[in-house]
Image 1: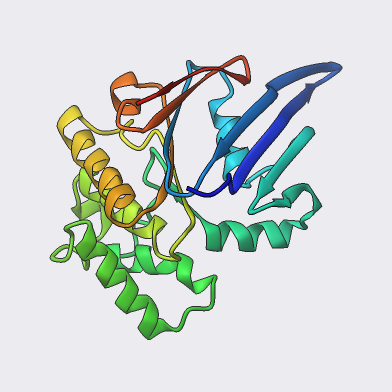
Image 2 (image 1 turned 60 degrees about the vertical axis):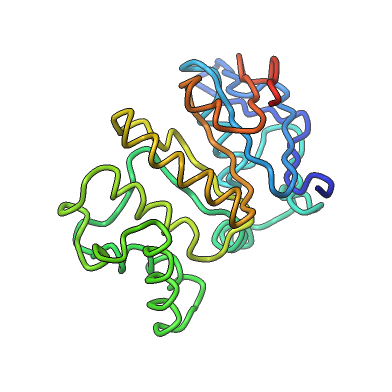
Length: 229
């Protein structure tokens, strides 16, 4: 593998609550190389959500640096960051975040609109991705007509629509039963193994985290230990 293409160096995120400063991240060091499957674990309040925002380029640090493909994102405008997120990072959320008035196909197509992908290409790519997650026969169903596991697989397909460098999964099995969650994790492993996708997965569940090749443990806003298979 090549050198890290996402690298957080001594990242702090401090929120002000009146006259009080509350650090959500306290000098976080974290890096990922192409092709890795990394898990981030931590209890409630450990800074997982804030770390997720930093890794996903949704926010910038109060102190420290975030390098993406060697470039310091603190120098980027918000519009540049938005373009980078759209092209480079695919998001999978615990809540699925599908639009109920759109079909599975239309939900997967949606992010490609913002990248100016022609409609015919959007349809073709969305159909291919839904077949990849075994939903080829359900692509014209709306989310309310799908099970929780099927909705999460639609979300996985949507996360891949712009061929991202990183797939960022935030508690991807949090709203699913154990069996269905296992199926979703199997799809993530398949993406990692067959499509060579880099995956960063945030979870509080040790059994889920064990699917990753490396697990970083976050306590009080910084990495305290790691486990490597």
